[in-house]
Image (cartoon, rainbow, N blue to C red; front, side, top):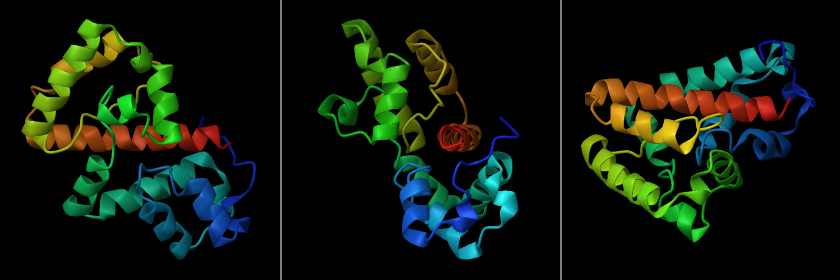
Length: 173
């Protein structure tokens, strides 16, 4: 994945097209792509690794409040937005790819209980890059991470957001 290049070089895109392509990489947080566009892109940004690192760097430098807002922009797994069909196209595809749209009644109840418990403990939804994981994998990680201290879990959730962004960027290569 390190040597992947974008089909349309980011530096060649006008702002509207740049935002249409990259504005949704970080869930409901187009400010990340907008900041990168404002900083300017060059030929190195044609490479996935470099571009993804720059986007992650913007998030990492944004400070705790902006990061918390970004985490809170993510939907719960198998949560209310999914049931109502109100996920972004990216989140819907990612959750469906992990089979979260086909939960048994027991699995759904576990997700709802864990979503409630986790949200109360950490103040943001549980976030995990679900691509390549099964419902069982996700539930096991959910239960394990619910025991983390808030600082560890904040860092873990942010790292997962960066993984999701990198996977979404790879889809554009």
